[in-house]
Structures are given as C-alpha cells and as structure tokens.
Length: 331
Image 1 (cartoon, helix red, strand yellow):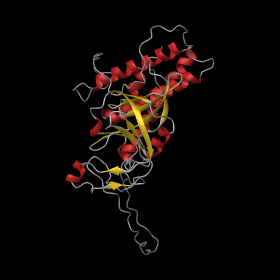
Image 2: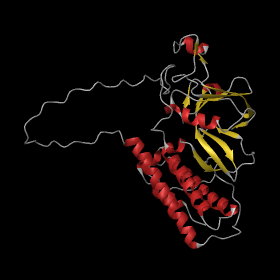
Image 3: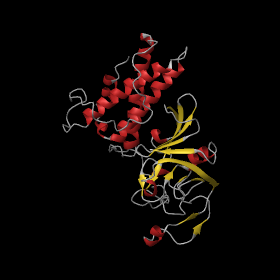
Image 4: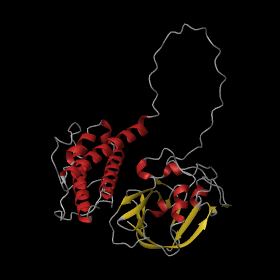
C-alpha cells in the first residue's frame, strides 16, 4: 500500500495549510483523484483494494490533521508528534473503514500511478485554493517613463453596483444572485464521488458539518452537492422524507425578518430573486425544506435564515432526480 503521508506533507508545507478550508480542498481533490484512478484500471480494481487504499489515504489525512492541530505553529507535519486520537476536520463520509490486507495485491506500477495521481491532486487542489484566495490581490506595477506623447484619459465607465449583502453573505429578498456562483470552491460544486453506505440507492444524505448533500447512486457512488445551512435547520437530524415538491415556489417573510426590517410583510411570487430559488422539496416534519436560493455565494456556509439551500442549477438537477417520499437522512 502507498504511504500517502509524505505525499500530503509536501502539500501541507505551504503557508496556506494553516487554513482548514484550504486543507479540505486538498484532501477532497486527492480522494477523488485516487478513486478515479482505481476505478479506471482494467481489469477493474476489487472493492476491497479500493477500500484499503482509501483507508490508507484517510489515515494519512488524520495524521496530518493531528499534527497541524499542535500549538507549535512553526512545526511542519514531519516534525510534529502523532496523535491518532485527533479527528480529521475534512474526513467526510467518503472515507471507507479499514478492510484489512488486500485479497488481490496491487502491482508496483499501479501503486506508483496512484501515488503520482495523489501528488498531482494535492498540488492541483492546493494551487486552486491559493488562486481563489489571492487572485484578486493587486499586482505591483512598475513606474516606467513613457516616451510617447501623452494621450487623453479614457472616458470613465459607470461602475456596476454590487448587490448589498448581509453579514453572513445573504442577499435581500428580490435581489437575484444568479443560478450559481462561478467563484464557488471546487469542493462545493456538483460532482460524483466514491461513497460507501448501507442506505439504498436514491436516498438523500445531508452532512450538515461538511455542508454536503449526497444523492446515493449504484456501485458505491453518490452525487455530491454543496449546501448552505440556515439556523432553522441546525437542529434537524434523523430520518425524514420528501413530503412535497414545487417549482419556483412563493416565499413569505418570517416574523423575525419583518421585525428586523430585513423584509416586508406579504408573499413574494416565485421567480429570480425569490429566497426559495427555483425549486423546493418540503420535508415531512412540516418546517424543514431543501430549496434553491437567490444567494449562491452562501453555499458552503452557515446563514441566519432558511434551512438547506443549494444553488439554483443544483437544486433543479436534484429536483429532477428525486420523488415525493424519498428518504432524507440528516447527520
């Protein structure tokens, strides 16, 4: 089995590794790349071999996280002691339990391929997250004396005002933030992922801590969607079911929003700018729902109002795949 620890430790040597979200992006990209490489092999990689390699990668992630949590800021992952009791902040349900020794050992050439894939994934994810964080910083400009004749300054362009947002990034009712956020981190974009579960195909699993919604597919695969979580659903847990569905639903401000002058009394018709977005799936507890949003930038975060929200592109996709009565397991 590949020793994934030194591979991940190389990515964690970057200054940005102190940011948990940055590390989560590295871990998720490495997991996806590893599983993709294993599933692409011919003949097909046995399930126990996939589980064992996945377990090895997750063990390395837990080791890195234990070391990163040490108070000594200057220590690198290789210098810090190991504490297996510490939890991995990015250990999502995609990880599989240790299945013991492989029944069908992998060839050395294949193992080298997997290691190289994870190196590329770690570096690629790290570079992507670094770009997201720093792409908008202004680059220094050198003062260069121009020998050309001075030109008239270009006509000033009217700046497009940005929609006003609340402290949690939410948009006011009636303001349309679009169907999706183009700057959304890769880990919160809709994608298939390796996922082991005993739940039947078609079940929705909501991971509130990681801000993911999984739709279970055949062959240990799930469609993963990034979600935003409102305070209305912070206590939501256990097994629920989809009670009803609606397209472009109307929305009514809560008494709390009206009292805080964040919305006007009355009902807003469905359409762009509606806080419930393009689709809604009401749950059978009578107060919880999965819906779209007019503020797709809030996906991956906690917000004050609402329940479980997806970008409108994602909620339309999910809506078309589930039926009334679908089981919804909330972790």
